[in-house]
Length: 178
Image (tube, rainbow, N blue to C red; front, side, top):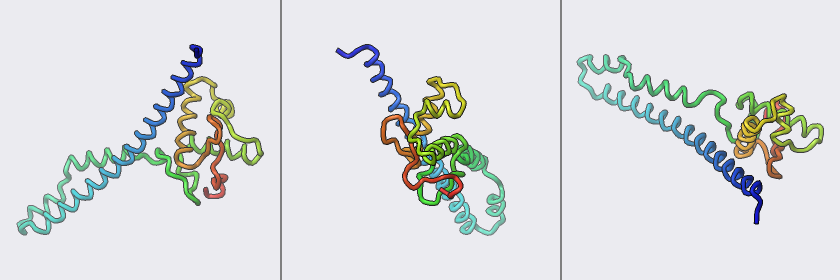
């Protein structure tokens, strides 16, 4: 019969995987929403232009084109808020600079690049928290784990052993442009 602690660890692991999956799905949906809002805005502009071209030339159409639609202003504001610079982790590709990532993600990559340069092997999230001078408490460690898992999913890192992270093949130091 499994121990209570073992059952709790299994449930904790399952919950953590579910949270990671939901976070990745939320990121994907947020990016998809931003694209859909852009497309909607482009169709709205196209419809207005067609209305302007096809409208009788009494001056009303030109005036309507100049008047700002409050819904469009709200949509543009939502679009700016939905896709903040560096809030997304792009899929890694050759030549992609680390500067596309937020400072937190760059810190993780820098720590792992230093470890690779010194041939010290992979890092756990607890070790990362200690390296960054954070309190090694579950909330901090899980936040780092979430970021590391997102970097794994986007190809920046690899997790050859559960919970142990290294740079992916081809990802090099920040000065190398990748």
